[in-house]
View 1 (cartoon, rainbow, N blue to C red):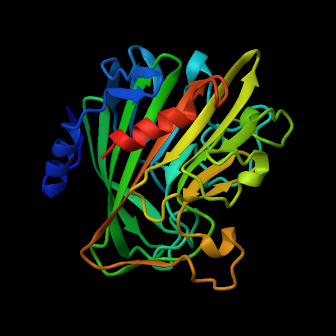
View 2 (tube, rainbow, N blue to C red):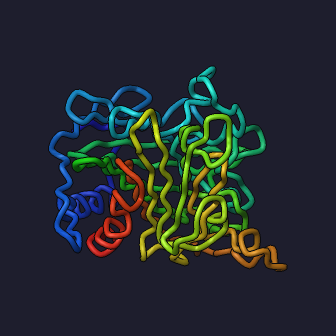
Length: 327
């Protein structure tokens, strides 16, 4: 076990309880997929936790150096890079150098008590790491949500788990907001909150785009934007190998099934707060949500990096099994 910061208090107790829950087998209608976490190995450094499957790097949880913690890079089946390099690494061929706040995999909403934890810059808030701990196949972290003026807005706690199965790699990303300072008002805005910026090959449109997309309701390609669904999957051919990315929304999440901020240029994010934008409703506060001081609100998502298209990867069955077996 490796620790960054002073790891004490009730959050540690919750982590131990969650760690005791079985996470190793996802049963499917047509059999079972054994999720192996025994090969997960982690190395903690001053600014990041590197996550390996055996000796092969899968991803790094980078908690210092940016305006928010990120997971970068993310290496999928066949050693294929699944997320965009920019802005962490510049000059990668065919990458659009836009939206520098789209950093691989991240979490943050555009409007929390008027502060943006989605964007970056002098007018945006920051998500600052307080504590990081690793145990088994999991990272546990706590963060301060700090406004653009340096004021503490709230705290969050995170549990991020890693596992693999034949033809797939998994990230379970759970975040809990803690309204420690005051009521939290989540404003209606399309920019939020569990996000990934994909490899340009997975884009629907673009110079080397070869991507396809579908949601759980059968809506395809760029028509998935703003629609509600339990999951979305993107896939593309990479030099004769088809790989994809699925993202799941847990049934216990607020306003499940969530709305998806799913752009044809490679952005995918799950956002339960952007109703006014996604559904073109006249009330700009329709999606607002108030979390009372002293209360907490948890969001649970899974990323699946898989071989094949959505049907070959059996994404719908994987989703149903995960949703049923994840508390």
